[in-house]
Amino acid sequence: MLDFRMDTFLALCRTMNYTRAAEELNITQPAVTQHIQYLQRHYGVKLFQYRDKHLFLTEAGAALRSAALTMEHDERELMEHLPLLQKGMQHLRLGATLTVGEYALPPHLGRYMKRHSDVALHLVVGSTRRLLEGLNRGELDAAVVEGYFAKREYDAIRWSMEPYVCVCAAGSALEGPMELEDLFTQTLILRDPEAGTREILERPLLERNFQLSDFRRVVEINDLTVIKQLVEQNCGITFLYRRAVERELEEGQLRQVFLRGWEVQHEFTFLWRKGSVFEQNYRRLYAQLCQNQEE
Image 1 (cartoon, rainbow, N blue to C red):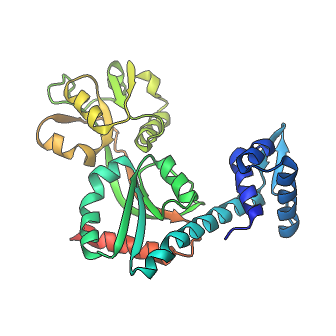
Image 2 (cartoon, helix red, strand yellow):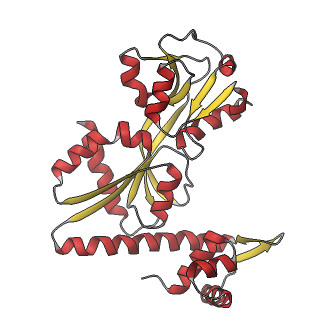
Image 3 (cartoon, helix red, strand yellow):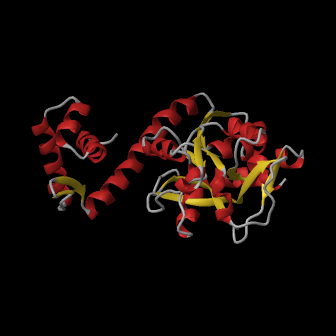
């Protein structure tokens, strides 16, 4: 069980404001100050500092935050795990981003479930940001994500390397190979800002001194199926992992637009909180799922 003063520390890390941390915890602001002062005396370091009237974590504070989040995660894991052990059961709280959850994970997870009938499974599909928050709060054991993450915070193993491609309607007038900037006359249909797939597009654009606003129009939709249906109707183009559009490409509903110099790939990554006492469990789970992939 985490010390109550560590709960205060994490609340202050989230809010970076003593008053809001006190309100979140339903305690007084002086109590928040006392708890932080106690931790600073205990560890012999300064955890926060002010710069331009804004509160920031020190390097030591950031290190303590990372360790505290892992401890909080493991505490939550124990709370969930121990009662199930008494019933001869295990549990698995796994997260997956949308592309992973819909197109990459289900076949392998299905075979895993058949082999491990004693495992109570809870799968959460969401954005990379929300899954990372779930790991930090101890609501998830591990996750397979497609977006970027802070490697100093998580232990990670590559799940797969995925091509990221441009697709258009089968009847589109677009013909490749062509230059990226030739697409700027098109309507770009893409996921919302929270989605990991969106950042996978934004970074290579910036590397080429382009941005999303260079396209004639940008339409944001938080549903892959709707995006693909709109592209099929020739309402615009999109960029997605090839895995997510393989069936439509094979059946001729969509067509890949080949771009000169565009060979963007990105990892799907299996990860968990760095330093977790359950690390070997998570590595074993990864190995079991990978075994299923190879069959």
